[in-house]
Structures are given as C-alpha cells and as structure tokens.
Length: 522
Ligand code: FAD
Ligand code: SIN
Image 1 (tube, helix red, strand yellow):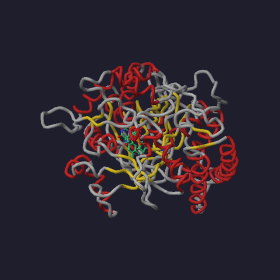
Image 2 (cartoon, rainbow, N blue to C red; image 1 turned 90 degrees about the vertical axis):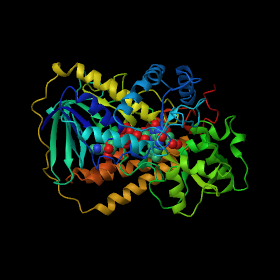
Image 3 (cartoon, protein in one colour; image 1 turned 135 degrees about the horizontal axis):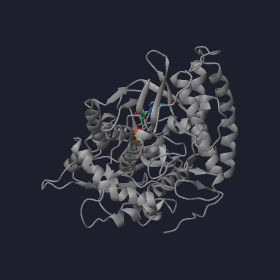
C-alpha cells in the first residue's frame, strides 16, 4: 500500500498533522486501538496559550525555562509560546469548545510553575473535548483514511534494502512502516513519502501511571531501532497528585488545576507541608512537589498525602471539576467535604526522539511529534499544560515542512514484505505478562522519583535479563501486540536507565542521591 503521509497515532499530534497535510496529499493514519485511545483523551487541566493581559509571551517563556531547570532549548520555547494563539484558533475553528466566563471571555486555569492564569480548558475534560473535535474533522476529510486496530511494528529504512546502517549513516531515510493488522493478524507494508511517529508516551514502563494502556513507548523504541537519535529520556515526570485507589490502572488524575483553584496539599495531621519546600508551596513546579511528597511519604511510612479543596464553595468545586467530583464520589469521597488521598504516579516523558524545529528526526523523511518527540521545549521538567500545545505547534511545523518537499520525494521501491520464516504463534502469553510486571517493578523500585548510581546499575542488570529473554522469544514468534509492546517498553526502559546513568547531576525530574545538590538555581 502507498500513501503520501503515513501517520502513526491518533492523538492530538497525529490528527493535527493529518488535517494540515491532507490539504496537499493523501494521508493514512494507523492507530493500534480505537481512535480516541490515547493520552490526549485523558488530559484534564487544559492547554497553554497567552490570552489576556497581564500575561505576556515573555512571562510564559520565562516560566517554561525556569520549570525546565536550564535544560530547555530557548528556540523551541520561543516557537511554541509565540505560535500557540494561532494553533488555539485552529482548534476552535475545528469545533473545540473552551469554557468561558459569563462576560464571554475565556476562563483560564492556573497550574504549578505558572506565574499567570493562561490555561484554556473544557471543564476538567479538556483532552477529550479536543480529541472529539479532531476526530470529527478527520472522519469527514476525503483525503484522510484511518485504520484502527493497526499496530506499527517497525519503520522502514535502507536496512530493509539490505544495507548496513548505523546512527551515523549519511542520508539515512524512512520509507514507511510494517504494520500489523490486529483483526487479520497480517503484516502490511505501508510505503510513504513521509512518516510521522506520534505514538505518545511510555508511562506503562512503571507500575503506577496516569497513562492509558496504549502508552508503551512504541514510537520511541521504533525510532531507536531505525537509528534515530533520542535524548533526555531520564527526565520522566511524575504527577504529584494521582488518586490513591489501590489496584486501579491507569491511576486517576487529580488535576493540578485544582491546586490552581486553591487546593492545598496536607499531611494526615493537616500540616501544609509544601510551605517547607518551596515559596510557591502547593503550586511549586511539578518535580519539586512530587519529590517533596515522596520524601514525606518515606518519613511517615504512608502511601498517600491529602489534597484539600473543602474550603471552596461546593457548587464552584462541582462546576469546575465535575469529572473528578463524580469519580471520587464513586469510591465514597465527597470532595466538597472530604480531603482527597493522592500519591505521585509516572505521567509524562520529557525526552524522546530528538527533532529539529520542523519536527524532523535525525532520519530524513521521519518526523516525531507530541510526547514521542524531544523538541527541547520541556528541558528537564515540563511546565504543566505545555504538552498539548507543543503537539499542535510541531504538527503544523512538520506539515508545512513535509508539504514543501512533497513533489521532490518518491515512494521507495524494492522493500520486501515481512518475512515470517521460522516463526510460530506464541503460546507463552503468561511469560509475556510476567516479564512486563517484572519490568514495571524494576523501573518503579530503582528508576523512580529518586535514583542513585547503584539503583540505576541494578536496574540495568535486571533489565538485561528480561531483554535477552524477550529477544529470544521475539525471534521465534509471529508478532503479536503484547509481545511487541513488551519489547518496546524494555527498549524505552533501557534508554531511560542508560541516559540516566550518563547524567552526573540532579536536575529537574532526574534526582540522584549521589548528587544531592541540584545543579540549577533560578
Ligand atoms: P497520544 O495522545 O497519547 O496519542 C498516541 C497515539 O498513538 C494513540 O492513538 C495510540 O493508540 C497510538 N499508538 C501508540 N503506539 C502505536 C503503535 N505501535 N501503532 C499504532 N498506533 C500507536 N497535557 C497538557 O498539555 N495538558 C493537560 O491538561 C494534560 N493532562 C494530562 C492528563 C493525563 C491523565 C495524561 C495521561 C496526560 C496529560 N497531559 C496533559 C499530557 C498530554 O495529554 C499528552 O502529552 C499528549 O496528549 C500527547 O499527545 P500525542 O498525540 O503525542 O499522543
Ligand atoms: C493536570 O491537569 O494536572 C495535568 C496537566 C499536564 O500534565 O500538563
């Protein structure tokens, strides 16, 4: 099968690219589940854009740089912040509804690390509203074909023409992907002029995460295998406040916007402990809050702290956070009268596939967008609600760039179909599930909010065993979703540990007890 633009993933990044590129050529979107199974659909707090005074681009830029702890790429920060209002207008044109105040102005949230209210939102279900509008547009576009239940396994490069390639091979390019049709179990060869990897994050490498089950880092692993450069993988952001509800996966998020609305973090005895750690107290940058909670939990031997919003007017709480109100009520907590038990959970991958300002990776004709990519915007710690806007801005950049080269690029010939020789259907599902649990345990125990040289070394040793066993199984097995995801998660976990071991400092979300003095000060 041939297409101009192959888009892997149907979250905000993939669908926004598809809509922009479809004005100029044929777009094929493949996604491994239903279209709305993605991190985008779960986003609560909202999407950043400078909207009204006294906010300014300069303030948003500064907040992003401070939160990123000196590791942001200033060019990426400028680009996203200054182009944000334009992309918000596109979203609204596509039918996204953001909440407004009675006088018709947009109602803006504030979250940790922000010096101003600048987060547009739709109740506490912003991502679902954005995804709804994008899906509606994509489904009615004549130039876009969507294939649900299609799992991308690997990207096609000169390697598939029999050439020996490395990360340093000149002119390395991407020609499409092998995609497993999950209904027929056939592997399709999809050839494209341009390939966009927008497969989201990798929260499922940990045993507690806010990410839905689809977030298994497939795109990062695929790009790594295709010899694209990845970076900043050690900067895994933990959200400080996921609902403490043992056994629930994914962990339900209690949006940071609740702290922007006045919510206060407390210990069991009521102490407002964040005052000890940061002048912004409960609204400090996310890495500081997550680490402080982790510290308090270890001191007191507890599993959770509390978020208290009971001092606010009940009707205001319910109208701002209807989804959270209902969820908590369903497990017996009335948030207008009771404190909410919360605990940190793996939430966002600040690193990923290294891209330039066009969203293009080190492999030509291969773009990485959204959470899969590392644009340099987030540095060592993402500012809350900066990721959706990053996905949209870079989708637009990438579409412009690819479209400008559409006429000069041709579909590659000579790519062979998938070779099934020597492989069989697996009967080892239990082993795959067990290995996944072990990997999640290794990452949570040794590569969590606080790390050390020893814990990272231990993690790598244990992961190596899982890697060897999984490769052995993969080589004799007809690909299936569970095995491919496990293989990808192990690859991503390896990158997190390897890049973590190379970072000899504590900065942002990467905190090592061997370097207790944080290297960044404002
Ligand atoms: P996703 O939306 O995750 O989409 C990835 C897509 O790729 C999915 O469709 C998936 O099925 C598909 N896919 C994956 N692997 C394959 C494969 N092998 N083959 C085919 N398809 C594949 N950010 C904000 O800015 N504001 C917020 O308020 C906010 N709140 C959040 C709340 C929660 C609970 C979570 C989990 C995240 C939140 N984030 C928020 C982060 C933000 O939602 C994500 O970073 C962003 O939505 C990522 O968009 P994306 O398009 O890159 O990936
Ligand atoms: C939240 O609503 O707290 C999540 C926001 C984000 O991750 O950007």
